[in-house]
Image (cartoon, rainbow, N blue to C red):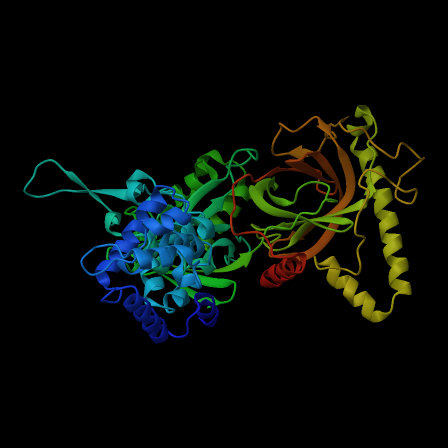
Length: 585
């Protein structure tokens, strides 16, 4: 407020009003700016803003009121005052034309505008202009729609309308579930909806035990909607993600925000959102009876199975897979009334990265498709699970790729031989184990414990700033020395005997690297890292051959737009990764 007062050239609001009265008396005005004059200023400002007025010197004269243009009480122009006003430039911010003040205030963050309104009456009246708040909604929250032509985006017509039968009328009629937005303005939307709930926008991971998940909270039309992202049905890894709304927030006609739970099959119903602490919030359903179905648990399971897997239980012949599916349904259904979410960030990108980091969908055998986050940390690439399973839960480091150890593939005939590929990768694995043992014997005990922490997904000592992903030193090249730069697109084929959930995979690849994958028993027992081959197909697809399991996982990039999700810096992102692993450890 002190800054605004300094720019205005006045002190407190009382002094500002006293100064305005003195100037108006000098120019022949007989009253202060009353409510009628304030409405005129706001009305003229709004019309000029809508017409694209530039707010030059001519417009400043045209928009001046009786006190500014030099009129006397009878409406005649006081030429002396008019010439005096034209010759004297504005001495303070308050003397600028209203349309210029609108442009200036539109550039300020919405959080400081209430303080600007405290400076003086003129500022407070100008801040009623819709143009200012519309620009704040657009720039801060990406809300580009016109409130007068608003259609709720992201919500199907079945959610917007419900059929209400009037007993007096035989034919049914439809009742809209949305309030009348004709009587709302952008200031109400900003003040009562967008600003109070700005802290929950972005990506979140629900706390659902080993299964995890991915929630994206966005501004969607006049709603704030929490979308749960679900992988496509197994094994169609390259299909787009599926979305399901979990909750939504919107304004009532009383200008009060209301939270509604969207879970279940009976439409929106009462819910609640509570901020637990920074980067964490929880949702609660107040009407869990809306989640139940008339046919009981059997009908709920059949419906869930159709949505989750796209098939019926009779179509799943593998007995072990049936057990895993039933186990997931029983476990996740316990969280249908209350959930806690923790914030996650997208990984920062660097020019030296092998490919652009981000989110990918991957095949995981009988567990179906899961979501992983690929990030780069100096000489290594790491894939962290956002969704998991009873063997390797969400938050764990599923893949750890050593970018200093590329692998040059043999010809196609040798690629088909699993023994030849295993010999190639295991030779590098032995070198890595030997180097790690030698380093452990030379390092002090404190350094060893730090390395053990890094093996679980944290940072492990200093990392090189940039890695040449196309070169291979003699220490990491298995067998005789070969070309240090593999071709940009080399033939690729899976070895015989390696199982792949998706038979359609690329037949050429760019580069291959040695890496390890995390495997464990049920309940995350006896976890260990097993060697494998990382295969980069293109910018949006990569794969991993699990040699010990003799299986292949194909990963495809998640291309959905995810606003408010980028990490502020690499330190915050790495701290988030360490926290994710502690949630499930």
